[in-house]
Image 1: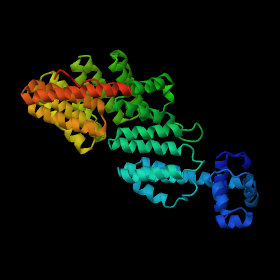
Image 2: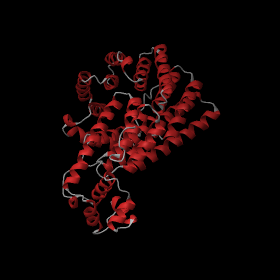
Image 3: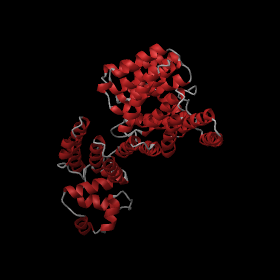
Image 4: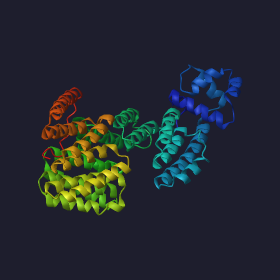
Length: 444
């Protein structure tokens, strides 16, 4: 907390200082009203940062809120801040039970927003999303003017809750709010990188590729060495590789992949290392270098026991598609079954929709049109329900193809219905400036 003359603080900050000093002296609002002859309503408004003329000065004088008092408050702030930092570290270790126990002994009125944010973080680690969201929302509501960036951080965590629960639209909604509440003052400055990178991830998955690309390129053109924490920097690497790969800048994609892999390896970032090897494999696959692609995917799988289960699905899908290309259909079937099983277990609907699409492609390749259509319809239902419109576009393209191949009278009618839906989606994309994603493999 900065040390200034009381009247040099903003109205929000003066109100908070008055509240803290009043509590420190053991006075109620009613006690202070009696001492100052200022009404309880006015005091309440002042403490909430609502301007009220020269009444500030009356309360400052009555409470003797001078530089010595502010020094005392600052000492209390620093003591509580150290305890909260310690609890944050305990949460990072995964010991949420101990963290919640430590929070019981904290004076919650000093940093109420941070206190509530840490409670939410405990429940997020434990995947109790409803409780986590409750405390993050309370953190935003209760954060004081001296808790710089805590609102932005809580909005970011709300976005993560929604992302992990498959609602990308809500995740994007909250990350935009996080962006609006970021301040260049105060702690947690690294969120100036975390927030836009998360925003780019959500935009990319929702099919807003141009907007996502603009964020990625802007961050990439800055000094990437400043980007912290390391896992966020590695997420940026993965996004940049995807951009280069999608624009056929394969050599640049390979170079960035290898840089990211080395950075992830020396920092023991196994999740990011797994994803970067998978992404590099995808680059080689697009280049038609199947042996190199397979080597990358197998290298990623060597880390299978060191990473979170949620991120395994993409490499299984990639291996399925690779073995389809090589006409090794039994191997392809084994990998896609694993992909579907993991994404179902992890309740990762976005990746499940992609896995079901790949499964349909495999069945179509095997000329099992009925089962292929069933898989596509499952993928369609998920994509449509959760707003994964660019995945829905790919799925509908394949459903239309399957109906055309099966070719009975009813299928002809359905083929026309689905081609109309494709047109509707194209118009929707155009109105929202969304680009349909590249088909997983339209040849199957």
